[in-house]
Length: 135
Image (cartoon, rainbow, N blue to C red; front, side):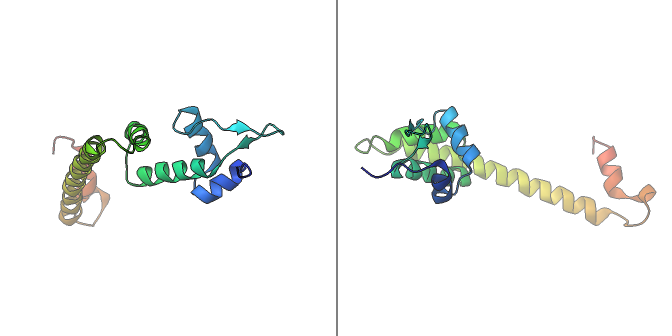
């Protein structure tokens, strides 16, 4: 068995902040590691891999509940992939909705800026639109 790694080393290897590692332990995404003789957390390469998995999933926008489910599925390598695919499809649909919302927001902001007179605040269309929430 390899030497347990300190939290700082794991943080650097997984590119995750120390506070984030502790948070993931606290919510059960990362198992609480054994303590060394000096009562320090001691991690192994599997912890680093798990943290990289979580970080990548977070980078892709998966929420913590989905990540928890995906981690559980990752521990069942012989199971069909259907449930993991369903989680990814659900997330993809949510991303599509966000893109649609952001596209609409962009159009609204572009119209607001384009219609502005760019003169004094008293004639500023941006201020007028924001002041009139019915528009």
